[in-house]
Structures are given as structure tokens and as C-alpha cells.
Length: 291
Image (cartoon, rainbow, N blue to C red; front, top):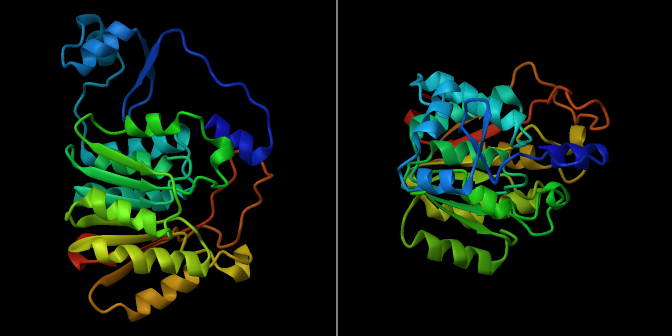
């Protein structure tokens, strides 16, 4: 998050330091725990120390919680710690949808700083497969740590599989890699959030929709972006209008903050600016996208 803020605002900010070899964080509850290498190794082996369990209990990490509270906490964690360029109202609605789906196979095009990937990894099945594609020369490279892929790989449970593909989604080699990694499995959730030009977004839709199962969902992000209000190259809204009007095999639904601005924000304003409406466009079975 610090790197993201520094990149957006042109600031030089020192990274935080911790007092131990490892730092533990709950998937959605607040707080951090400094831990030794031995404590983490024991935790990963399924035999956490009594002392570590007590520290977790003191922070409320071991308490049960209803699904709505989990979803609220996930969105807050994403906003506070793992930067997602998301309108929080829209993200909350999308998180609720993914939680109900509990997908087993996810493909995300456009990972950026990892915020949405973080949310989705918590809501994908424990033994699920996630394939994340991000161009190596993304504008967000400057704000990501050098070991971001290693961090991303630890977002979900150890039983979950994450494959990062650092290549352009339109390259034939990327498509071949995805097909190989899927190994015949159908995609439950395809997220299109990469190149926001008309040609780039349409290419992602045309190339990757073949992998989505009949009960799967295709999610376009940033459908509120249009060249009239965001400038040239911000064309996802134009594509969404065409796709939503022409699709016959799937239902369509929009998630848009009704109170959010529809114009491009001024990123030079203070950190806590109001995120405008960005919008999700969903294609899928009515039971999945409208519940």
C-alpha cells in the first residue's frame, strides 16, 4: 500500500520495519503478529505453539463470524493494506457475489498491485486454482515490491494453487500457458481487468471466454470508463455496452456505486480522495450474478 501511494503521489516513503523474522496477518481481521521462524514453521506444520495461539486469540483471530462480517472485513483489509483500485461499495457487492459462488477455478487478467487478487484468493475454494496474468511492463511495476509474486502466492491457504503469468494476455504463449495450467478444467470466474483500450479488452474477452464453464461468470471491471469522461484509451464501457446487448447464452448485470462520480479523479489530491464509480459488468447464470 505504501508503495502504491508513493507511486501515485510521487512521494519518497520509507518502508515499515517489523521486529521479527516474520509477520502474520489475519485474512480480514485487523492487527499483525511478529513471529519467529520457528513459530511460523510450527504453524505451517499444523502445530502452532500455545503462546502463538494465545496471541491470535487476544486479537480475536480465532472467533467465528457471520459471512457478512467476513466480507466487510475483507474489503477493509484490501483498502487498508493491499491496494486495489476499487470503489469500496462496488467491491463489497462483488466480494459478496464471489463468496456465494465459492469458485474452484479463477482466471484474473490484470493483477496490478494485487488487491482484487487478495480478496478473490480468500473466497476461492481451499483446494482451488487461480491463474493471474499481468503484463511485465504494467504501469504499477514501479509501486510493487520485488518479491510481490512470493507475497501473492501466500495470500490463500497452502492447499490453494496460484500461478502468476508475467506476460501480455494477448500473446499466444500466454494463452497456451493458461490452457496447459487448466488441464481441461473449466473456469468458474474470469476477471477481465487488463488493457482498458477497446481492442485490448475485446481481445481478452474473445480469447479467454472459451475457458469459462456454462455455470461460470465473466466479470469486466471499469465499465464506467469511457473516453468521453476518462480520455482516450479508457474504452471498457464501450465494449461492455456491446457485449451486454449482444450476449444470448448468459444474463448480464451491472454493479455500480449509485453515488459515485462517473469522471476520472484527480490523483494529485490527498490520499483519501473519494474513489469514483468504476463498475463491474457481469455475464453468467442469473442464479449466480443476481442472487
